[in-house]
Length: 389
Image 1 (cartoon, rainbow, N blue to C red):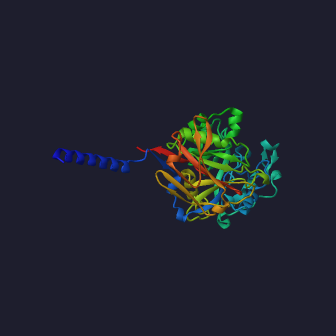
Image 2: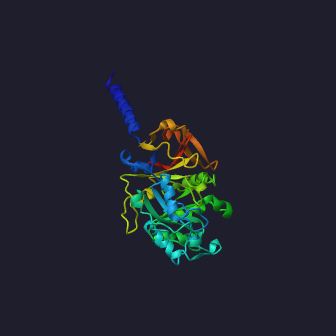
Image 3: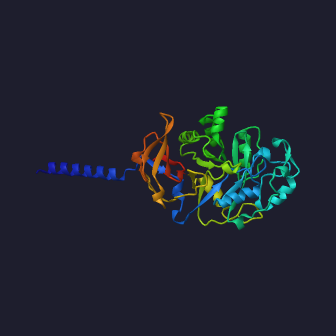
């Protein structure tokens, strides 16, 4: 073999080698971006929460202390008493908070009339005088909250706002100015009544950082269309503006209690509240978890069903996700969902404990898992898909 042929073969071999190295080191075109990657799974606990409850200021069955007692009995450890703003006599009190002053709140409002309830006084509507509750003694985190008519109903948390403004923008700006966070309650009601579109919600999310998401379940399931509607909004917003899903009891009566559990993933849980007279405990961590999507939803198949299984770990790489469950024998199937913009609907794209980027259509901007068993279903937060630059 002459020198020219030897040189040719060497150049060809080098080219093949370089192609092989390039193919091995080439970055994937799309990667996963998820809030769950930030979680120290080896050290977290799972804590049931409810943020949309109505504590006996209107047509509700239970007084504030009775509401707390019932949720404690059902195993919830994080709770907000979110009375309707139109039921709160805001000239006299703000929200039903702190729990340690419920008896004082009762004395202030017991003779005040509620015009939304045929001018009955709050004392006449109460089952008994309100009783104080200490979240620290109950091993709970209490959160200041209110369901504000914005006029779209909004669950407002970690702030004292108790009366909405004339427009949603004004109300949300008030929440933001007070350092609070909020999510949209039962959006299906307003899609039906007012013909609100996904773009309406998208505008609010882009304009206000304090809006962190919206409910996909209200009570047992008053608005089934809320789930595909949420997915459509998530698809439009993409990873640049993440939002999170919620379930809400919207509790007025016993029949509407225990239908949803927003599971907060926390390290080193400590009871408390952000009220200055009560130790903070894990209250700041709860707020951060809500903002950052360190949660998932447990939707029981029957009222009161507690979690039959938990996500105890997610193994996440740029292109692979695996979910590890602590009681896998209670799981029937795992569905991976996304929004299909061509069909304008939610569809299942994969089944199983693991999913690879190769299983995900090019049109997908996010996925989320539904982990279903006979006792209920876990709904994960959206896991976003990002172009790798």
